[in-house]
Length: 212
Ligand code: DC
Figure 1: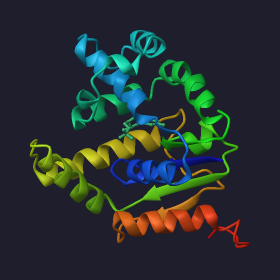
Figure 2 (figure 1 turned 90 degrees about the horizontal axis):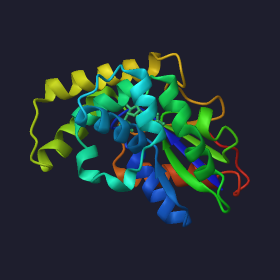
Figure 3 (figure 1 turned 180 degrees about the vertical axis):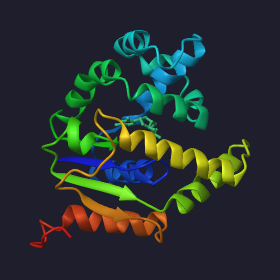
Figure 4 (figure 1 turned 90 degrees about the vertical axis):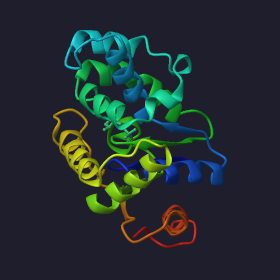
């Protein structure tokens, strides 16, 4: 079974995807980490984030195992990832790896922005996870404080809105629900309630129900 989980920054899609993968015993790929890896390496080497040729080369040679994952979690790297992700050569370089991951025997869970639209359009279940920008910013704000990198709430929400706009309005593989994706709004749900709702969506056809 292939499950895709797409959605904007801090919507809860990553946590949900991880929980779904554990529940169904499937491997999980956080596709955002690939773009974060490229953004991080571009920043590290001092290249401009709009240097398309260099970013594509970095993507072609990317080895995530060589990067300490802790370096990839910051909002600064998220912002860089969002910028390099709009470069067609970067997306092309990362495409096959993601498609191969999705098509491995037994299936997989992938989360990101275009996993249901571009990477695995034939997925068995597609979730599109959303939440209001205010709630997403609140969650991110708490997460950053826990990691001892306190940032003003207004800076967090402004970054989230900027990132939403860039990811949704780029011409290649923009953030949008696949036509057959099921929308899951987690604005008023905690993680356990969101997980129960996601399981309901996955299980609906098996129980003889159509997906909402
Ligand atoms: O999910 P995330 O916050 O880790 O993603 C970081 C950025 O990477 C996001 O702002 C846009 C980009 N991205 C993408 O373009 N396509 C994906 N499938 C995953 C992430």
